[in-house]
Length: 125
Image 1 (spheres, rainbow, N blue to C red):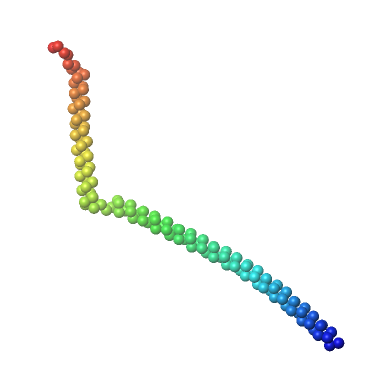
Image 2 (image 1 turned 90 degrees about the vertical axis):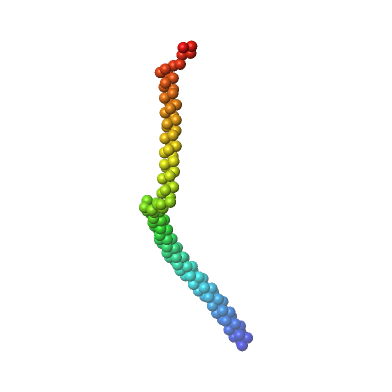
């Protein structure tokens, strides 16, 4: 009788242990699913926040680029060093002189051609 009682107690203990293991595995699975759901929500929130930060940073960089271009145009339009101005002016005057000399040379050449057409040279006179 006592050995049957020990067997029954051992069977009850075995069933209890197996039930506890199954319940533990089920609870761990449930917690894991909850964590997965929470992780995906956290990841989505982080992605949205990252996109907002990225967009704002992109807008900041674009605004800085536009401002730099504005500053470059302002400096270009309002500030020229005296040395640069003199250099450009001297180059311009030299080009105008060269152009004038070429025009004078072409004018003389054209006048000679017109004179030859108007007053042809007759050989033997």
